[in-house]
Each structure stands twice: as C-alpha cells, then as structure tokens.
Length: 303
Image (cartoon, rainbow, N blue to C red; front, top):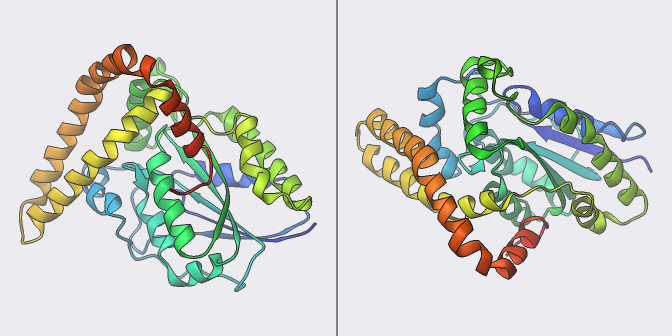
C-alpha cells in the first residue's frame, strides 16, 4: 500500500540522515517527502567546547530557536517519520523548534508518527518531551526507534567528545572504538522500516512498537535508566540557575564553564561511585520497579 510519507529531521554530523535513509529503504513504493531542518544560525560541526556547553540552558528548557522555513508540499500525510538527537537529555534545539512549529503541529494532528533517535546512549528523558509535544499537537505516536552507541558509558563519553570536537568519526589514538552508532546498526535499521511497512499494510500500526521491542529494537541499559532518572532534574536546576544568573547581564561564560566542570566531575568521579552503590545495595531489591520502568520507556505510552 503506497503512502504519502513525510520524513523530517535535523542532522549535524550526517549520522542521523544515514539512519533515517536506511530506515526508509523498504518504502520504495511510497511517496517520500524529505525535509531537512536548518537552523537560521547553523551550529558548527565540529563543535567547539564553548558553543556546545553554551547550548545547554536553552536546550534543557526546550526553547525553540529560529529555523529556516519548512517547505512542506502537503497539508496532510499518511505517516510522519521524525528523526532527532537528544542534547543534554532533552530534544536538540532544532528538534524542539520543529515540534513547536505551528505548521508542523497542524500536520501532525491525527497522523501516525514514528520517532527515530540517533544518540550516545541516553534518550528516555528527551523522548518523554517528544511524546508530550506530539500528543499536545494531536499526533499519534505509534513507534520509537532509538539507535545508541553500545559501548560503556564512560568510554562513549571519550569517543563522542573526540568526534564532536574534531569532526572525525575515527578511533581516538587508534585504541578507543569508533564513536556513535555502529555501522552495523545503521545498516540494519532497515529491518525496522520493513516491520513498520508490514504493520501499516496490515492495518496493525498500533502493534509496531510491541513487535519492535520483541525484536530487540529498543535498548535501555539499566545503568542508563538509573542515571537518567536523576540527571534530568540536575540539568534542569543548572539550566534555570544559569538563566537566572545571566538574565540581567551576568557573566554567562563563567556559569556555563562552572556547569561544564561540574558535569565532567559528575561523569568521571561521582557517577561510577553512585552506580557501584546502586548495583550492590539498590538494584537487587527493586527488580519489579525496574521492569515496570523499562516496559514504560520502551512503549509509546505517555504518563
């Protein structure tokens, strides 16, 4: 069954573009409209450390940035595929701008939406924000396909910084693994596109996410679940603090740098200690709660 499909995304490095293109390969008999979002003032790639951390407050507070006009050819589509990246446990600034664009929100109304994420390893808080935006626009989220870097948390911090600050998706010092989503996972995401196509053709769109989970398409490490459940609150505190301290001409650079060094300390010193305590003293006694949380975040439900 041919469909009119809107694929809309923002990709800084090109990785997410590759992911959504592979996901859409099975839809060869459908009409696909590709809309690549462009901020009015482009973000640099590679990033500089100063620009990356300076984006944190507005990202966490989900303040939309100006973007170039979105050239939609239709007022209604059969399916929307929305690709985005999380920044600081929230939708990226361009993603928030898309989701708050009034024209796009009208297009989402009563339309099936599938989100596709390309990220390091933390996406559940950002997806909660995306769920809320889609629901408030009247869209029907039928699936979420998150692709993550599957190496350990601290190793991925090192590799992603190497990629972000050099623009090179290569092995740092020839020792660390390649950063980002693996080439194999990017190539294989087409299988989930084929699954979506099958469900749509059989009028089973509501079953897509359940089957996706059954096939191992939604990976949430328990350590990441624990970190995300606490870290978003801390990011929100920092975002509000920096905004408050700098709204009347305060030294933004000082406060952003303060946050940067706090984050580095928390990642490499505090986090390993807290995780060790969690796995020894907490996790063995909270199995049911963990199961419920995993089931919820793997679904498209909204609390």
